[in-house]
Image (cartoon, rainbow, N blue to C red; front, side):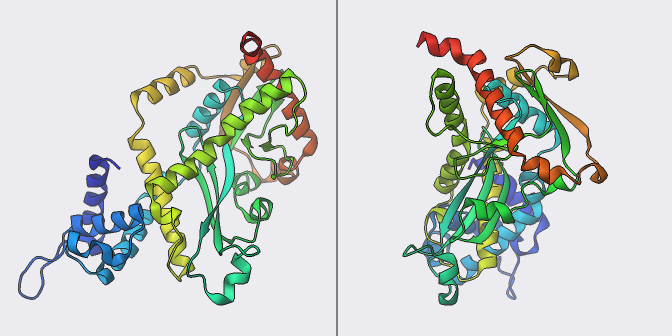
Length: 359
C-alpha cells in the first residue's frame, strides 16, 4: 500500500469515524492518534501478528489493538464498500468485454473460483461442518476476478465441507441477472450472437452457458490452443487469491477469532483494501494497454462481421423482470454452452492459429 493511499484512508477515518479521532483525557492530555490506530490495524491485517505484538512499536496494548482492528474493518466496509466491492457498472462491463475480446474470449468478464481460509479456533460443535475428512476447519470464499486482479464478487462464510458446486448453488453471483437488474450484454463469436456474458472456470463447475471450462484431453491443434489460452486466462482468479494472501497475511494464516461474523468482516475489508490498492497501483503501461483495447466502442454493426471475428456490446438499459422469468434456465443451458465453446475454439484458432503454426 502506497503512502498516499494510506494517508487518504487515515484522513477519511479521522473525519468520518468517531473512534479514530484523537481526543483528550480528563487531564487534557492527547490520546492515541489516528495514525497509531490505523497503523495498528493495518499491521495486524498485513502481517497476521498477535494483538500485543505492536505494543512497543505503537505504544498501545493488545486490547486496544483489538478495538482498533474491529473499528477499522467496519469503517472500511462502511466508507469504501459501495465503491470498491461493487457489481460491474455498464462502463466496467464494456471495458471487461473489450479486454476479454483482446485476449481471444469475446463475452468473457472474468474468472470465478473458490479459496479456503483455515479456521484455527473453530468452535468444537461446528468442526464437523467446517472440516473435510481429517483436514482442519476452513471457511470458503467464492470470488470473481478480472485481468487486473480486481475482485468483483465475493461470497464468504460457507463451511469448508462444501465444494465449488455446492457453494455456487448458494451463491448470489447471478442474482442480478435473474432479477433483471443487470445490464444487457450482447456479443458475437464466430458469426453467432450470444446474450449472456460468461466466466472462465476450472473443470468442477457445471457446463452452463455462463461458464467456459478448458478441454481436459485436447485432441488436435485447435483444441490444444483453446486449452492453453483458457487455462492461462483462468489464472486471473488464482492470481488474485495469491496477491490477496500476500498483501494480508491474516488471510494466509489460520484465523484465530472465534466469531464467524468478525471473520467475515475481516475478509470483506481485506478485499476492499485489495481493490483500493489495485486501483492505486495501476501503472501507465497497464493504463495505456487498456486504452488501446477500449478506444473504439463497438456497435450492432460489428455483429455482422464474418466468421472468426468477435465483438461485444453492453446495453445501458436493464432487462425487465417480466422478460427474465426463464433467465435461470438460460444460464444453465448446456446446448448454448456447447455451441459457445465450439465457437470459441474456432475463434481462437482464427485469431491466434497462425502464430501457433509459426511456433
